[in-house]
Image (cartoon, rainbow, N blue to C red; front, side):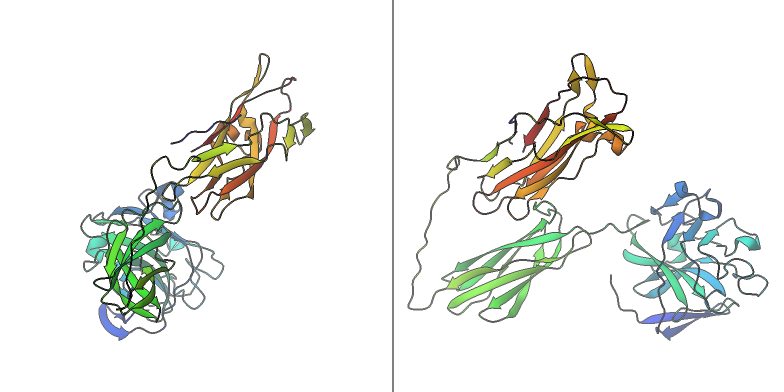
Length: 459
């Protein structure tokens, strides 16, 4: 069975001290962020605990911004006097979203609301009973609460105050923090999207007349090696030989950047590029690229050749796929009938003779239903455990797929699943793949000799 297809950051400089409604500026000291998971909720969440009402984005003009919040632990001892829900940007307080009630309405710490035994915090806009303290007023939209907020990253901070009279010292009181982003143009807020990992690829060429070097940079996705077509930011060009120096920066647009050096003395030069990243892509550093600048008594000759389409006779080839694999007789095991073959499905070979600009290949498989005469068992009862016998750098085996009855809900190998993948590398790399096959079926399945067709597709 051989089947394949072709084809931010800002420096913390000031804080604020709130006393009887007045705000005084003070130098930031040792305010401490407490590890904790904050969740936000929309209306209808009783004391902020209805998971179906949790929100991670919204309009910055919605009033109130939220109706409730939870934190998965209590304020620390010594900081249970009162609490307040604030907006910070660049380490500076720019607004207040919730002026909570004192944690202890009767003046005794922990009697109502948060006590040392509490393991979580729950606030709700509609909460009024002392037993549900702390409560949040939360009668403002984000933009009303923090009118100076600008597009970019900001924090929602839940401060735990040491003073039970409602006086907060934002430079020393401890707080829980939730990082969010704000778009002033769209009037929205949201949870930040994790930046994608990248690699940086460069080529360098020399101009022997102008005595310069041009370094071309391409930002790629680390996941599959394709161009990060929306990447922006800057690329810093570094010279590593014959001496170390930073030559300058180039603007990254649509994932690419170009930089040309000034006049260079004769010699051999090596360069690297460091991409600084942006909101959507993490930074990365390239490997080296080398050029030579000829001296006054030297001359250069360009050596050229062509690689013509069709010159490579091999392409991408799938071979050594076994024509059949016998799993033997199914035996009773923990309420199921199971059978397996750990070595019969092995030696499968992918030979990649394609050019270096080709995309990574992927070998996938799926199985038909099993039949024994007129009897049928679904292909979802078949699973596999892929592994590599050998292969080039970057080659990877697919994930284990369990039969449906062992990991419901799952479609087993009835669903197209990856057996292996690998990028294009120098040479003609060969990847050898194997997979242990196992079947698990209901114990009351009908007897018979069952057969199914497992189809592999290389693309």
